[in-house]
Image 1 (spheres, one colour):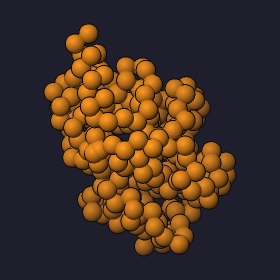
Image 2: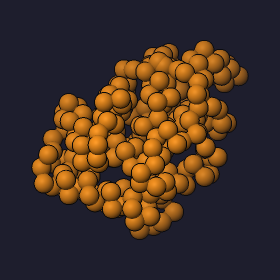
Image 3: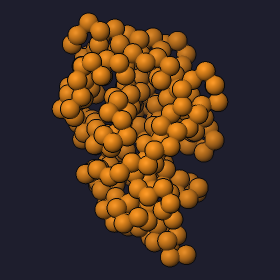
Length: 235
């Protein structure tokens, strides 16, 4: 790992320790109140629908919503997820692909992802996934979820970050652009601020959680998603 990337890691770690991170820097992913329902999905390439959300703190940059699907689709699903949540990984491996194929790609659903940060690892993974821009976000996110059991392993923060950087290289990013993303302290603060504001407003206390046309749902099987979506489209 280059010296600059190690410095970038230190900057993000300092951000967490400095109070911009809600949970303690050593809190493990398992401490989250994760939904225990098992689910599934994979391939994630589609035209992104860009939209920015401004944090309440005007000194912070706006955050780009990561979304795919027709912005005018009759159904909008907002997923709240953490890259360190095993149930979120299960959803993306076993359910999301079917939702994308049957509803996003057919213009019935716009799918939005909002990050939840239970730990520093989730924040770093989110920064990395967003580093490729909206066009590459879902593909990189898919890779991070599929390799979750590997990149989260390590004795220290530097090892885990090195694992994430390797995933970024596999996704076609270079050290220079990843270094730039990891050193953007204002963007990291804005991501955490957006997470705090979004989850408080929408009453999110577990992952994955979903807002479907504004109504809260916990994790569920694909068949249940399909029933809800079809009822909204037909209604």
